[in-house]
Length: 146
Image 1 (cartoon, rainbow, N blue to C red):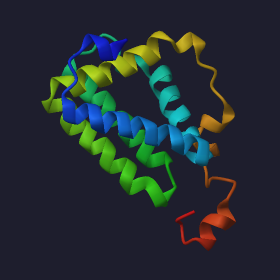
Image 2: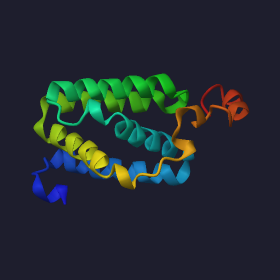
Image 3: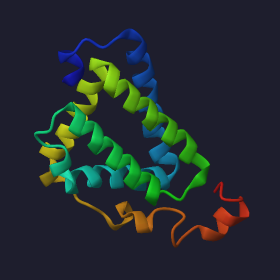
Image 4: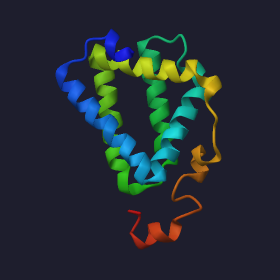
């Protein structure tokens, strides 16, 4: 529905379509991504006061708070550089391009509006994210790249 209400720049459309397909495929291959995505959704639901009714500058601060929370909690080094790079790219585009700002706002607003439907799972808690408490040997064998 959202895609139909906003004009999507062609470069962004191609990038986003491929990125969404890639992210969905990761969920099927690796539960660590599912754990983190669930944690991210839960973060915005539990910290909705950082977002609801805020202006652009305050929402940028909320996105930075989210990034800091994720960075502190994610101990999986193999993909941390990539996720961090994507988030920083998102922050830059959020600040400078209306399409990205409206898209991020829509997604987070939607998450908050549907918070009643969300069922937090223990796997979404950062203390349960891979490799915390499980997969530690595998992660050490692979030099932190498990």
